[in-house]
Image (cartoon, rainbow, N blue to C red):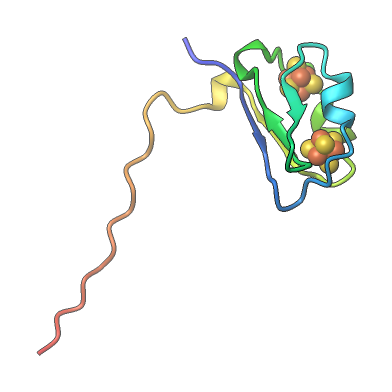
Length: 83
Ligand code: SF4
Ligand code: SF4
């Protein structure tokens, strides 16, 4: 059984703490670096709060049904033969 994936993009996060304060499952915490961190991903119930309320669009929640069971194989780079 999968679970929701919760991702914070640190480059966009300004550490306002809205996600940490209002997530009903305490999935987030603001770290010493001033960025939100995902500390309790397994508790996420995909309530839909965090994504639209992050003022910087720094949060993404991927519902468990959309998380692939196995990662896609990495694309192999075409190798150019040098003559
Ligand atoms: S609501 Fe967005 S900007 Fe604010 S701490 Fe959370 S991820 Fe960062
Ligand atoms: S979707 Fe809801 S439960 Fe999941 S991390 Fe966001 S606010 Fe928390």
